[in-house]
Length: 458
Figure 1: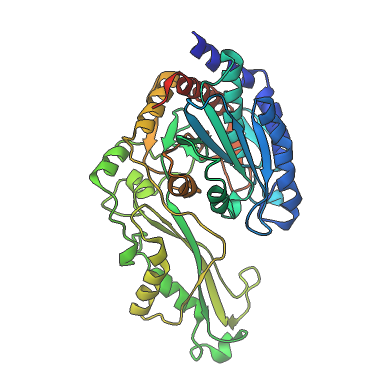
Figure 2: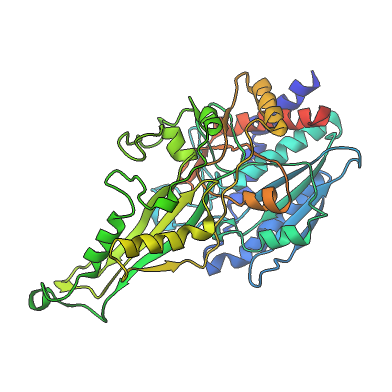
């Protein structure tokens, strides 16, 4: 059967070492978007990968970012016919900070290292390995069928890890050129490594600092203890009003109303425990919700970092200031524009007017979600099940954040994401990696999906 031949051909690209060899080259490009030293490597990544798309029959153009100083993007297209469906796909070639000194012995971020079933390197999971899988699956279908049977367009950016500057503006500028019937892309993790996952949106995210600045400098804790207000204590108590002792949100406007019966039904029974990752704390989060509902259907608040004085070399002094970096991940139904004003009202009502809210300059992504019963969702789910022999996990939205609003809201597309990593992959952390069996499986199921789109899309 030609479909099975295409799937076998895609998996053979892993078995014969071609996938690993190409991923090695991509990982070797130190395309950090969060450090100035990475800037020249962002364009270099596009210059390196564009010929692979050209060899697959794409016309490619590196376009300048409309945001001054932001990295360029690659737009590519393989056009087979005006009467055929068109798929837009997406990826990002930039990576987070290397954190080279924190990787364990024998590993380094920009050299692909294979240990058993793990392929280590910065970008293996997020997102170089994922868009490479989709490209090679397209190549396998073309090699077997001689064509795709549909048109495909690509938008590859180099700034996702800094909030995708210019991605929305680029989508607006090239709206006609990016017109399509659906977005099918890959980012994020599977729920379980051995079962395909698909999601149709993501939680939004906003980062901000809470700061208490009382005076310049620190003062001797013996001479001034009991006389000077302690900014760290004030900040700690203010933070403690945002949630209760088990992390349940207490800011009224941060509690969403969008966890509908339909969404709860979609989340029912989905696994959330992952033996490859840390154990879930059963007594954390909203008591009335299941773990899946907490992660995919609710808002979550986190304190990412906090400081007062010098924690590495403390002295006997009362600090003059304290600061905490915070984050709210939020689902559809939360008014993003009201998140920080609602927090301001809450802090004032709790008696903490001296706590300042400092919004971060870095852009973050709004929340999006496609109906789990949409035609493209059913089509992709059926294809993945046919290839894998078991139904995929279907999430209304990812628990993390990504720029899905660009495709859903600006380009007006139904959006379906099929991730090729797993939850314990250490993305954004030292020792980032992907699992070889997941990569091999993903090559096959994506080849099957692309084959099915060529046979007749919704």
